[in-house]
Length: 127
Image (tube, rainbow, N blue to C red; front, side, top):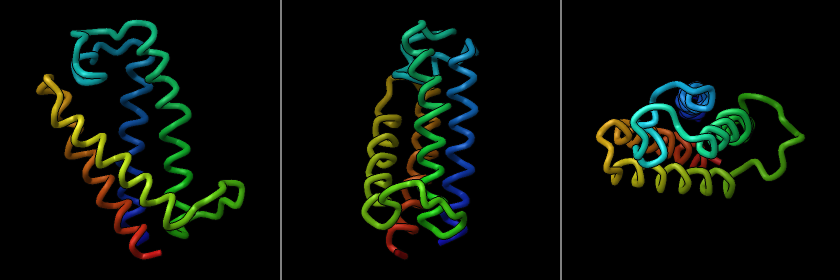
């Protein structure tokens, strides 16, 4: 369970770096948000990437690691089996959306999301 949670956290950290890079103007719009932008994302999507990279994914990491018992985080409510299954579903749907993208480069994130989903399912099933 700890290995699965650690792998999930590392993969989410990769997504964090990618989202922050997008928010700072990295020209990878073709690999995110539906792949509709060839280079730098428009302001609204850059803000969304910033929120994802600085808030959403770090909170998900902060949920997964204590659920697996790797770190102590009493301040995070609801850690445990139900929350882990919700996160599993979130990444499963995200992976399917990535695979369905018109952008070949965005489809790269499909296996990443599914790997995170599998790791989260392992943690959830062990609780």
